[in-house]
Image (cartoon, rainbow, N blue to C red; front, side):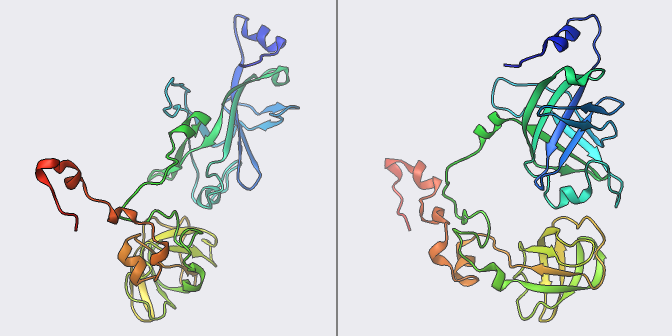
Length: 300
């Protein structure tokens, strides 16, 4: 239940109102983003919402609609930036470095003429996945606590291993010892270039693996490898998505092997059968389940 102070309630009961929507986002590094839909900055002196809410924010919220079911409320957050330009409240690096992944969000409205008379909370939750468009813009959704009830919390049987990440606790593969440092020798684009320093690994060894910048403008940024056509000492890489900044000759990256989660890969590539979670290969298929008494089948 929302509690509204007497001065703010009196303002809401008047013939006209001067309300502004404000929001505060807590980034994973501990810094805050504060913004407002008003055309001037809105300062809040004290309380849990204390801070200055910038009118120059490059974040634009949509209208809000709540649902009685567990569907995501349609509060969308959109924005854009100039390439290689730092904005007041958010930068490309914030998004690319995953500093905003699942960041907590609170929205509220105030009387912008007297913001310290009280604030009325509207939504609280966290940011969902961030998507991009071809013009350099981004968008995401503010997801409430009820949306967490839609998440799957059980393990499923599949013909592919269900570990979340190659090398995690359940997997056990020593990814660090299998990773190498590669140097860019030829650049085609931000998502396609040639590297050296691979060693004697076969083509495809690093496909679905991670490429993390060590030096250059993309230091600290991670991209997943789509295709690697490596030879004995040099190879051509293609990524699923481009790096945010230009890749230049001489940039270095840490490159880790990839895993398609198949049973055979776990056996031949990583010698890790004991930790494989592809239990679905041992379960009869749908044809056997639907055969019925008259159509007995033999499980191979």
